[in-house]
Length: 270
Image (cartoon, rainbow, N blue to C red; front, side):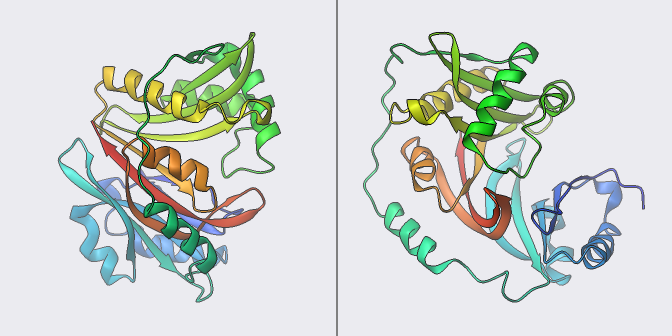
């Protein structure tokens, strides 16, 4: 079946990820996803869907794990749906969820914009990809997308409108983040945060997030969102303190750092 929808490869995460459903593929994509998951022996299908397509997916056994209001041009909500082919995969990580619950009950510490003394924040380009891959390799043992490959980074810049941002210290790239921007839908996924361990504790992720929001707002972005690791409480706290709203957890969803982890969805409207 030739699809117009965007699917992400999923062998490492043992899942199919329907990133963007094209209307021309509906409804035949629903049995297609089942067939592909069973053929590859995957234990989960993860789908990001406009609200208007939910009934058929619910009928096919999908359940809602998170949502983002006004995801599509501020006019239609997005639902993050899951279908499981393994009873154990749908079980939440109890201890990690308990720890995250405690974080959500903490008092907010709103981020105050101050100058990043000694650090230069700027947008990154093709000339920076080798330094970016070096930093990603320092921070991550494994990752769900091939960010260790300079060619992938260049392709994502040119073809997918992924925008990368960095923090430099004495000319060295010490922190990176990215925004997967959709001009068609006016939303951006804030992701790929990596900070050199020698420069942690200086709120570089917060500073980069604030910088990205400012730059993307200029381009007309109306919705910011992220999919953050459940186990990374500092990263969740970063979005919480930047006034993002938690909207659900994707259970055992993504392979990162060598194992499949649950992910939290956060969003913010401009």
